[in-house]
Image 1 (cartoon, helix red, strand yellow):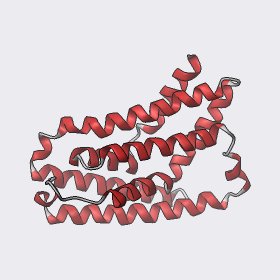
Image 2 (cartoon, helix red, strand yellow):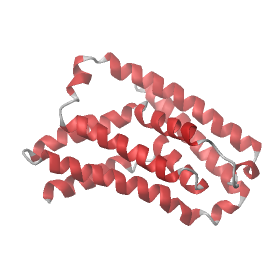
Image 3 (cartoon, rainbow, N blue to C red):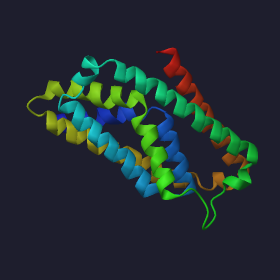
Length: 200
């Protein structure tokens, strides 16, 4: 139980930081658009990465350091483009962002965005593969119990973020609130992209 709780709390503390992936999940939750697939895509991706980290996959980054750099620049480029799209949406006005029956982004496109925001983000690998992988070694031979706790933490967080966003629905009935949300999401994307490039 100690290893499981440690994994659960460690995962929550790492994932809870505001980032591109979290901002996207929050936005989908507010729009009530493909929430279950997005939550599952993010949580299952984390599960795969946590498993890889505990299994020792983190050594690959040490053997092939260029992979980290390549992912960094690819992730920064994607975040910049996605941020620009959010700014464009804000300029079009909040009315266009209000959910309406039969409208919205397709499931395939939404999942593709969620997966790119997850897998093209170097910080995801640092948090899940490297950090959680390294911490799990402290709980050997119970490292897989730690991993299970961490995976549970990921599922709880993304489910809470995606479905808990509905509590803010009355606020976002105002079109201006959607404009501000898009501006915040776009700014978050660009700030993270700039931080990635600056740290290269």
